[in-house]
Length: 174
Image (tube, rainbow, N blue to C red; front, side, top):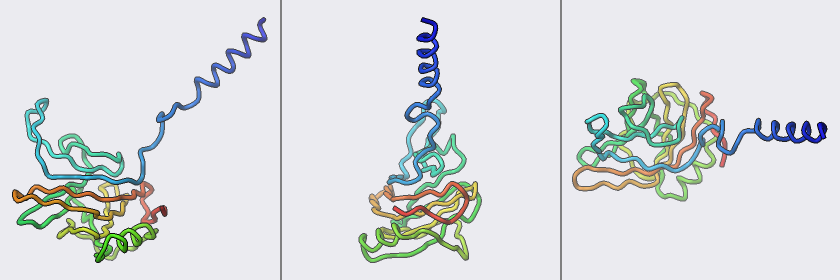
């Protein structure tokens, strides 16, 4: 009887010590995201809020609560990307005539060398590929898939992204 109890307890202990699905996993390092410049009122903080995209967290984050993100802006129908890192963080890798070419280049872009960074991405248009440097000096590559500008200079920007959290400019292939 004792032997059976020990076996059951051993199996139970082994089962409970295993990580569950999602437990301890890192956020995704690639995906598709949409950011916009729409302000929303946050009743908890009683202030207006804008969402930016965090590559490290792989999600939209409040600019009131996060410190390393990318946002989109628009002035006179010219779209730009900014960050709060105080680093020159953007490098235009290329402009492409169509989505097929941009996607091919994006998917085969495994490494990059950047001679000079810009403070912001400006102007941003569809089928561009950008390299982004976070405040922690990790990197992401972006393919701007679509941009929707409204007459009020409200803008939505959708992009595919691949994030390299190890601080190198080497990106995994698709």
